[in-house]
Image (cartoon, rainbow, N blue to C red):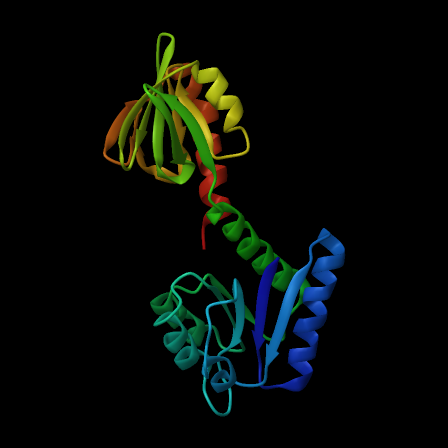
Length: 236
């Protein structure tokens, strides 16, 4: 279950945000574990990295949200931070603490729900998925996030990962089906690319980690559309 913290010193706004979270639960069929704090110092005091998402007011009486975020980041690099503020210029500083984004007060539900959806999607993408790959002499468990791309080699598939290469019997189509719910797309008939590892596209080539791969003409349109959709969904 996703654990959300709301840090807001205005009781009315705090209750509004709590209500928005419950409305989101009903709308999308989600269930969250929710904890509310009345000021920045309350969440920072004896902080434990148990939260997935923190909605953090910037201007508070005892400890402002930026100071609280800086303290949290010293012990928790993974929690997703979303600032709530009435002045956009304060929120710009959020990039220094790797905030996902911000919502301006007065907070409309639509803007709030969009940011919460973005945070939930980022959490989903962080979840580790493993492939069990038959190799000579046994099996290897591969974290899908570490894959750069897969290459077809006749009756074998070569996996290029952050930890090196693996050669396994099978077809690229079979692995494409196994990875159907992950951001893997063919840039040509022989390569299945992890979009999360794409660094850039130059004309008819794509940079995937340390590798440069050819994009074929028949696959180019679909590949670029998939990459655009992926970047758009993951962008701040």
